[in-house]
Image (tube, rainbow, N blue to C red; front, side):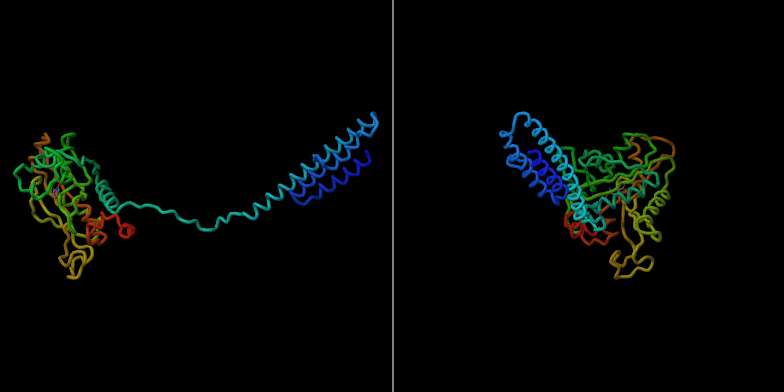
Length: 341
Ligand code: DAH
């Protein structure tokens, strides 16, 4: 029996070492070590063997079993490594293939225009301040010198939220809020949404403004003009000129409407110009010297204390800059429009 075991064992080791696949190896394992495997078959004859021979045969069988298992494990490890390498080779990742870009959002044209305007004023030392969109009637009107019976209240079709509470009709409401909460000097720009009951190609019930306010000793109209000229050049280009036309706003005295020269056709306006329609000028904002009554209401006093204020319509600037023909496009959520920016 020992000889039989030796023959089986030697053959088994050879077979295992040369097994070419994991499946073959498994088949060999079953045929050698399984319940009906070669070793078991031999050991079935153990009953016919004399009692003192038996332990020797048992020991020999165990030794072969151990060697077979050892060889099996070693070959298995080898074959597994080979299989893994083959798999890695066949599944190699090609890092040179361009990736598929995921969809990325962009900032809305209003957000971008607002940021651009704010940055320009921040470079001149203006701080960004905000106020609430739901505002007291007092801060929206009385505090900026628009009394109850003032026609300006009709000019601005106001949304009333309740007695004494409105949706602010302009960002000028932030002027008195700020002045009442801190001492002068004040140099601020206040961006935000404003509301008026108005709806057509150039008016939306909700739109955006940036209010500017600079109060300090000796602030002059020329300072206003200088700041606005800087803003105009930064926004529309270095050649652009600014012109102030006398106008009336209750919160400033004197007040002005401010135009910039057309950045498209410049000094020689052409009648076909789509930007200025041949006038050579674009109205972009309202401005003026802060009305003394506002400084008084703010509790500000000081020799020579003056200030200027301005209000810019952000949609208007964005429309001029990008040639947008209809204001309503900005709020349509139409991706064909929005994707252009
Ligand atoms: N509040 C004005 C409006 O909504 C804009 C404006 C004009 C603001 C003149 C000002 C200013 O500060 O001085 O139409």
